[in-house]
Length: 95
Image (cartoon, rainbow, N blue to C red; front, side, top):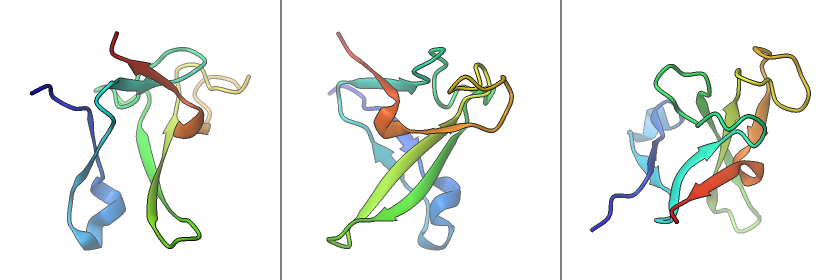
């Protein structure tokens, strides 16, 4: 059985316990669409943050945002606090 990419929820669900979200099997990692920096690298150049979003059906949806300090994203200077929504992030899939 192939391992799946997991993203820990940590701070988001303090009062509900700790867990993780499995990304689809074909996803290897998420990265900045501008510079290619991977989300969640050990040196935290691209730290992961989560937001809780509720849709019209009252279903909890996890929206992943990444602050890329490598390129600054969106034509901003590097190291500024810039975030981008994972729905617009580059998803690197298995070949």
